[in-house]
Figure 1 (cartoon, helix red, strand yellow):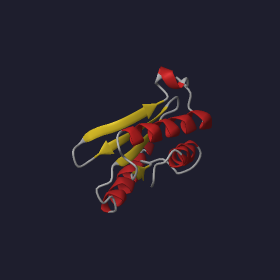
Figure 2 (figure 1 turned 120 degrees about the horizontal axis):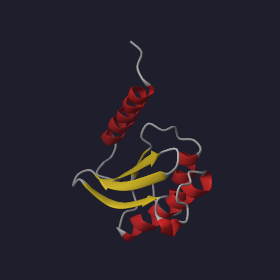
Figure 3 (figure 1 turned 90 degrees about the horizontal axis):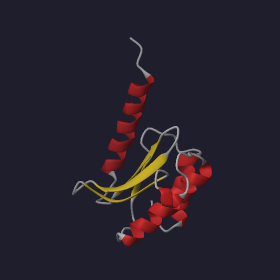
Length: 119
């Protein structure tokens, strides 16, 4: 029986997350989700089960509602870095989920790194 694209994505996502948890050392997780129209990122403390900060192209203040391009991803990355500093977080681990580290995901990560996050 053929495995659907969705099931393959879920397997890839859980494989990535389980490998990252082994090396987390108590750091919060920077989790990225990308859809066809938007991109969002959350800073999650898995030990307490709370979201420390988040940013998305759905926020009107960023000016990229409904856009999912490299420019929007870079803006979301710099915004999450700024909000993470306000929350007192500098070291995180980057959870790309089931997405490849290429294109928009890479642009978001580089913007977050240049904003001061370490991963």
